[in-house]
Length: 362
Image 1 (cartoon, rainbow, N blue to C red):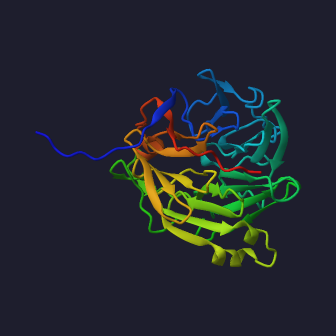
Image 2: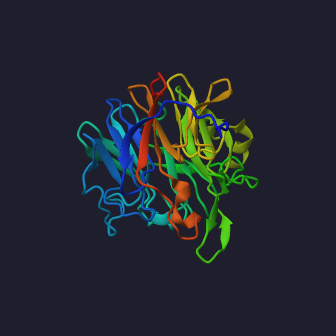
Image 3: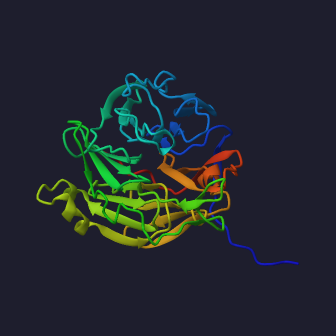
């Protein structure tokens, strides 16, 4: 018998198949180089940051850089959650220093600038204990090179045990501070119940006990002019934004900053987001195997809906005007299924043509 089926659409192209560790981040440079990262979540990770060269994954910028030194935690990557090429010659590497979401190794959480012309680490930024808390999990990063003497970095704290927040880092001075610390816009939505592949997503232990899986501020996007920062908790379907001038207005203390946050409404539950050169925001929708589009007027539509989009993680726009993203089956990890790992290799790096380049950071 014939029966109606769900409508899938969007022309996905598979760029790479991953048969080893599970990827999260992907970023394309202005020359089309592809970088990928693998956090230490339990898989065997030989290099937490790699470059895809001729179809192979090469430790980047070197295997030495991917070797953590416990005696000098600022040296070597430990567990990288996000990478961003800024379009101006630098790859920014965000090291959580928190394998399996543990307490960050003291002095190990860092943002590292790698010069893409020399493939050498140019600068390492570490954080004080009042910025990276014991509960902090550094998740995503966006760069604006137009503000301050050398630019600023915006970072999400997607804590699963403490307050969510945004972290602002002055790339000239190295000073950093937290904003919207524990505010509703960076926190878990208490009414949010994630449903993925027809099931409620819960921590499910082998002994049968369950608990909510709740993740605070996660995805980030920045407008092409750098004047608006968009963000979203992973455990929420809402998109929020704030004018960046308000962040640096010393007359507005952090407790008052939430009043300046705009709620754009529901966009779907997202892990990653990215902005195109015309201000359009692209976001994953991990509950619906989809990629969403948020136009500058606030209207939203679906770019792609495909059963292969199994947890779209980080998004990146290349100079070829394709949107790239990893589908990493995060929801099939053993911790959600009583200790049984349901992930099916390969994980995939996909792309879909959008006809737009990325927003510039400078």
